[in-house]
Length: 141
Image (tube, rainbow, N blue to C red; front, side, top):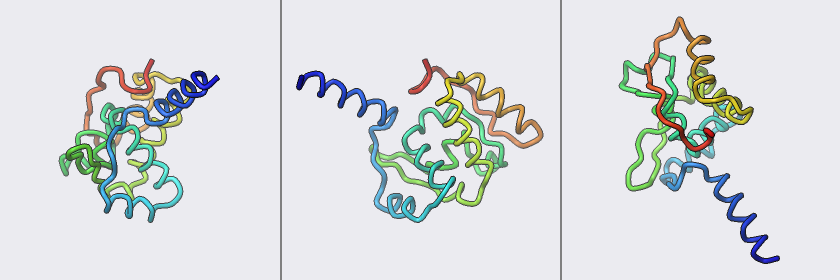
């Protein structure tokens, strides 16, 4: 019985941690606590799924400030497994929309390619980071 419980606990832990083994910087923890609603949800998703968001473009014009993917809109840097957040997405509904679209479509079993195609079509008239869709990541089967 104990082994079955331990297996279930470990499985749930692995599924909930997904790609992340990093921790937030102290300032990022404080920053995250100030957020609300969709903004907070998107930041929390980005922290747990940054490797997934590395595969998706952002369409807000942030390529001008050297962003390379939607991940860049939330994560300033990762240094020694410590995540430092940026405030870029706080006032950017496009960044938030891309992250939450990925979140919900992954949950609904869309493939990364399907999500990418939908986002590219929805934002076809917007500037893009032109992020290459990489290999499979955490949530992709």
